[in-house]
Every structure is written in C-alpha cells, then in structure tokens.
Image (cartoon, rainbow, N blue to C red):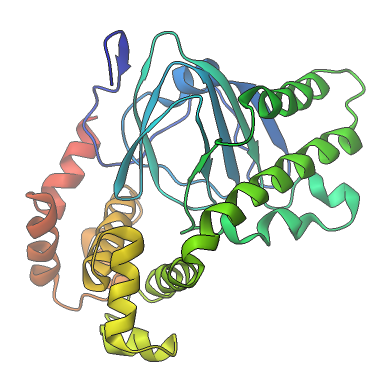
Length: 296
C-alpha cells in the first residue's frame, strides 16, 4: 500500500481478538463504519474466523487484508466478502479509509422473512468461495446506499427488521449478479475448484491423495489438477498443503489444545513429522509459532 498507512505491528499468524465490537454468536447483525471496525479488530495481526458472513465496502482509501493464503488490497472498486469460518487477518489500511462493514450471523435476520438459511445457501457464500467481487458495472454509490439504509435502521429506536431484510436481500441479489458474470467464462473450473476446496477442508485429517479426491469429484487427477491450477494458480497438492497449514495456524492459537492435539486433528500420527511439516512451510516449529502467539 501507499504512504499514510496504519499498520498491524504485532507478530503475524495467530488469531485476532476484538475488544469492543460484539460479534453475535447466535442471531443478530451489525452495520458499522469501517474505521470503527478496523480500530477495534486490529489489536494484533493474527488470523480470525467468524461463524457469520462479513460484507466490507471501502468507499475511500485502501485496506490490505490476508484471506486464507492470499494477500489483497481492497479499494472502492471491489466489494469484499469474508465467508463463514474463512480465516483472515487485517494487515494495514490507509488513514483516510472510509466505508462500511456489515456482519450477519448464520441464523440471523433473514429468519423474520421465513427462510433464514437463504443467506447461507448461495454458492458465493460458501467458506472457500472467492472473496473479491469487482464493482465493474455496478456503481459504488448504489451499494453504499444499501449499507447506509441498513445502518440507519440499526440505530432507530423502533428498528424495523423487515426493512433490514429487504435491503440485505437486495444486496445479496446484486452480488449474485456480479458472481454469475464472473464465473460464466470459466464456470466448470471454478465450480470444480470450489468443490475441491470443500472436500479438502472436510478431509484435512485424512491425508487423501489427489487420485482419491479426483474419484470423489468424478474427474481424472489430471483434469482436477489443471482446473485447480487455472483458477488458483496452485497445483491440487499445493492447495492441500496451504489449507492444512492455515488450519494448523488457527488450531495452534487455541489454548485448550496442546500441539499433539493439533497434529492429531490434522491427521498426523507422528508428532515429529507434523513439526517438520509445519517448519517446511512456516520456517519455524509449531512450538516456536505458539510462543510467538503467547508473546503478542
């Protein structure tokens, strides 16, 4: 990013803690100014996971964020979605940043309109879906108006959830249009990549081979590898390692788990092998990594 940045200077890699923002564990939502969100959540630079979905709109300035294994710079040309349980870490943002964050939990406000699961039954809201939605043909001001109206309703004494729901559904439909436009050119490979990531995430403790994943997805190993490479830039096996390391880093911050527990959850029966595996990708051992978290 450019000059005039507010950076996250804590040791990277663990889990962020939020001091003031209340992320509802069950039900509920909030819509707040992005500065309020960033100032609170950026107490350190560690990964975080949330059960709900976050919609982040930057109307001025830039935000640098790590989502999974990718670094992104977000500005007014992109709507950012952080899907449920997707690990992310805020790295820095410009001092002039403006925008909004809308957070909605899984069993939240859409329930008042009959089907609360609607928001979590959309392809683009699956955990391993794409998080960036370019606002090419959709004016930023139009999306901003939706956030403005949701925020306005939130602060009213007689908050009208029906109106909030209507605006959330409008936002979801607009994003669906962006999503459909993005995937039409390479829909088959994108769909396969999404299914593969879900299979890998669901089977991180089993250490399946590429051939076994290909069989699950009813494609050849070569076709699977080519599709994953075309969408992500990584081979199918590289993707497994990246997702496993991300999960390992998240589990290592959980104080109730010892390192042997973490290794077991990721399918490593040999603790020393897990330690070597982790060090290969992070250049430090799991024990050293955990010490960094404790010191931050």
